[in-house]
Length: 582
Image (tube, rainbow, N blue to C red):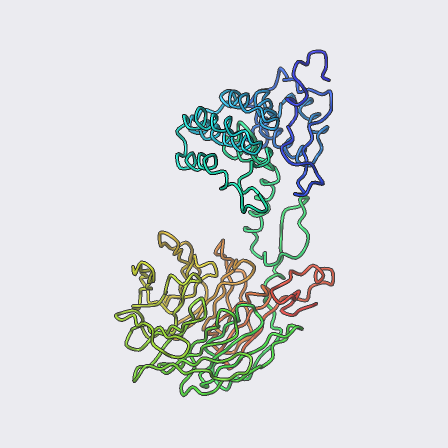
């Protein structure tokens, strides 16, 4: 019981429990009201406007979210003590009464309290009343009290004039009792009242936070702070390691793949293009020596030649992996597109269109169609056997090898003019454009389909948002380009970095969020034409150069302690230093 001046029951002084007891089938944790004699006594000096810290934080709000965290962790007595010592109640007496009424199924009392807990918006009160009375309705049905349920529907729910469609559904449950069972044998009900604790959580989400503090608010704020620190960290490129609240988050440069760990020299001429497979287990490269090579990323992190693909009569300008990585497309310069089996290295089909040359290639997201740009500026769509399904005619492309499709298959993205990228919506048949002032060299699409990274002739990279209103959101500068096609890519953990080749024989890496140039990688002796970041291993980067080589870049060897905490990738490997440990 409370002290001499206490006239409220304990359940109104501490946070009520609205989760199932620990150990029940749903595994939820019970927030027990403390069986404690402490009661929060408002202090004479306490005021709702008292501020702490340098950011204008209200002391009342701060104390309350700490109390919420204590109750959430099961420290009910400590939470009650905090209320007692601070003089700041976790909930007002009216809100505490309302919570207990919901848990007790006192529906009439909860409706009355709802109008007293400080909600100004009448629409919220109506919606909350509807949810409470719907619970009452279902519980009456569950106890076979059909007439009382009908009365609740007619005299309490319907007059609210909220969600008329749902009201009709509720009436159907009374008129057709058989609709409440799955079959006549089991008699299992499909419509049952939800747990009252779940009802309370649903109501809590509707109410202003000043009325009922959002559950787990302190933990949410801490997680947001950690996310912001990671986003602001220029070198954050790994989920390995422990998160500590004792210090601010910080990563060193050693998280960025900036050390040459392997040099591949199997091409006989300039290497123009390269791309890792979706799962990061393979790398494909193409060259002006008229060939392409499939490389395998072995379990030890070393890259080895798997197949040399020959058959093109002209330099191979682009490559595209199938969605499941079982096949690959290669495109010769104004020549043909070839489809290859990755496992055997066999050429499965050659796509060609009369006397026209093909200049680009990509897959449909389901892997059932092949898209290619043509020298007549059209885009051709084939089935796998080479039957032409559709041809998008007009100024749809120019003589560049960039053509991509969003993972939902809706948008086709292509360069249609020297300074214009075309976004073709296959569903609505509408078209949108990205207009640049400078000539476009190349582009690439982010994994989430929301951004396009555009390389320009004036030695700039522009990051465009293509979700909703098309707009430039960032620009990156520093690399060199005067004569050749130099490509860039997204990469790293959650694609937090931008990497680009350069005609000064270097690889440039920027932090995507800040736009800051963080690394310049030296090693090649010719222009670096293309970059690819392994999507399965943020510590592995590949670069292709006119010096006829491919460089694999990794991080410095991690300590054995860090190795054990490496993040597992899709092939079950823990990566470090561009290599792997099991």
